[in-house]
Length: 149
Image 1 (tube, rainbow, N blue to C red):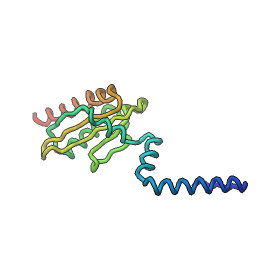
Image 2: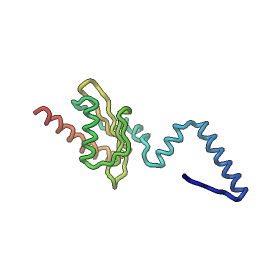
Image 3: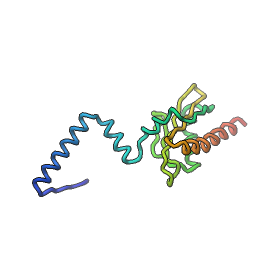
Image 4: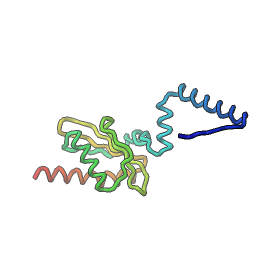
């Protein structure tokens, strides 16, 4: 916990005003805007990935939703992508290309029916999006082929 002791009266007054403005701003703008801003500063925001979905690389797999999600997680571990957030209920996984390359990439899942799931790979970077799709999709396809044998 941060402990701060301000002995100068003018600094105390400025600190009080800043704290009051922050609380007022949080109340007026809502927690969502502040939360997304904090996530952006921390480097874990998914807003840019959601925005880039309109240009996503899309492929449908013959898996139920849960299997596709878990197999995609496994494939990301195989390619050594850095998973920075995942939420099965929000149907997404957000990664960095690697520990060294912190270009964000999002994997979004859409259940089409009981045995088919659509996977969208999005990123503000065309290169990163294509790289991850070209690595993950073949792993998922290979798993389908091995199940059919």
